[in-house]
Amino acid sequence: MYSYIPKGVCSRKISFDVVDDKITHVSFVGGCNGNLQGISRLIEGMNVEEAVKRLKGISCNGKGTSCPDQFAKAVSSIVLNKQHA
Image (cartoon, rainbow, N blue to C red; front, side):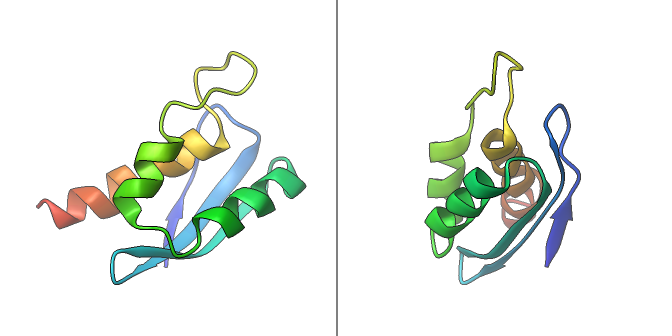
């Protein structure tokens, strides 16, 4: 299980796991509960690179980032960097 502390958004922690290059067990602490549950369910089972591609760059209210964008950063920094190391 991976944990990530997001920056610049309402959620305070993102947890997830990766099994066979697919995202599993996604949860957010804080933030917009209904929206984050929806995002979590939509990306469960998704390939890590596809999830990053779809979520990277989404902005919330002009902040330049969002909870989905922070999730993409978490996956990129933790999982993709580890795969390419």
